Length: 165
Image (cartoon, rainbow, N blue to C red; front, side, top):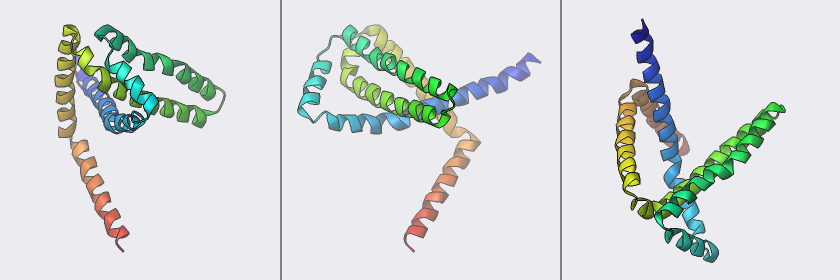
């Protein structure tokens, strides 16, 4: 009986993790590019140079910083929701997630070489990359994923057709 419950639960957990990872990946590159544009400004160019020069453990500490800075914002969002301002709270959580992902993505681009000097980090990163790739492949093989992709392509074709009329 327990096996009958574990298999669907495992599938659901795998699905949720895959969707979370895909969301992060969807935003990771575009958000990092957006922040990289700020890096062209003199002050940010200097800051990015300083960040790139950090030793490995200082870089690791800096990588943790965005998560810590966003925590109070999320707490304010939860408070807003409890005060009956659910949309504002949800908007704040979404904005914090976007800004946090953008900052984290850009920081990781800047400090990845330093982090890879840490043997344990390089091993964990390699494992993470393999696991993430396998999970993404699993997700893309699922029938609902293929259906959603087909619907997306159909909507895109319909939109193009309507636009050209």
